Image 1 (cartoon, rainbow over the protein chains, first blue to last red):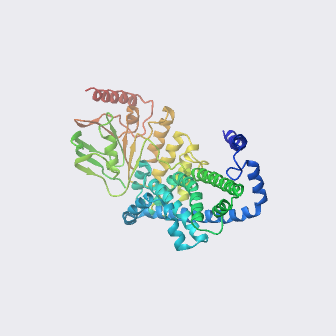
Image 2 (image 1 turned 90 degrees about the vertical axis):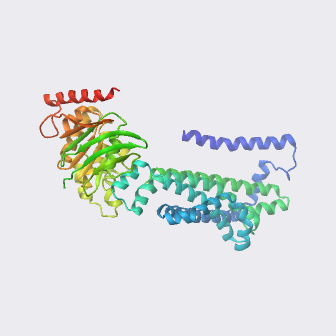
Image 3 (image 1 turned 90 degrees about the horizontal axis):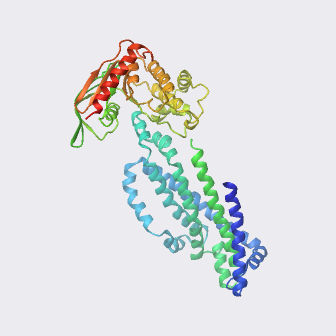
Length: 247
Length: 236
């Protein structure tokens, strides 16, 4: 099963590349509209150091934003599960925050935090924070009834009950939340860069587009896609670890 | 250590009466069996004694002595992600106390689980899981223990072994055993009640200390009598 999935991952890009080249040949579309895979590959190689530098900036902000968003989300969910007062105060806020498209905040975040790394980190953290918080919180509030009975009979105190029963039971849900976050995070970092940045892959794509360097734009897109896939795969690994390695 | 557990009154679910005129007095320091058709409220009574939330309400008197009550159900309620040892020490850790690991190990060994302390429930058989649950119940030192069909999912041989084990381990405590199995009641009961919509009535049991031997003639005779009594309540 794993081997077959691995083979699928290896074959699929080749098929896409072949189709891509076929479209370019068949339609005779000019390279500044759609460069062929060969040209994009050449651009990847020619601009490798520059791409690496911009990718590094983007990746660092992505990782930092994920770490901050997940950490804050977990802490928030645990506190909400523990404190009825916090629940009453925070629940409406969580609902409203989920209804507001966080991406729409990008101009404001950039206005306040500038063109550097902090605005991107905050964008990613914002996008990650709400799904992680709500998914984990929901799971924390729904332990299996049999275990709830057990905790009641044993006169469990709230904090140990949270850490010994509710949290381990909720870890798979947290894993799902992380996968969700891994899908959303690259959007957030790129939108942050589009709204205002002097570095990063998003910035590079805008620059390349403006200069008619479509092959470089596609090369940046490729790097970004690879990053997204790696992130998603990494989140999948973390999810599995959370399901199996419970305390 | 021994407590007097008693139930008197009517058991209601919303506007419908489940069982009327209950008169149950558990044997202090002994085994009291509750039998009867499904849906008559036996498990509800067990949960009430254990202080757990129930949908039904009792119009009458529920007497439970001071102290905690342990309930052990048909499902073992073990934490699937925790080792046998961690499951046994769960109660103390949930109360923020230091668990008595040495005693937990001794209990597991006493119940025939030496060497399996680090296994998770998935790596244990049904009978072994129930023994872990029994060890977890024993370490709590509750004077009153409610057993709600704890052995009904086990095969016959394992069930008989578990009955012996439980009778030995729980000696001296007030045990309320909810069971559908006439043989189980005949072996373990100091007193048995048949619960029906019309009330509770005491059922005849063989004399002698529990656990009574599986193959003693009086036990088998009592099993037959209990079976007849149970079948009688099955008819409308």
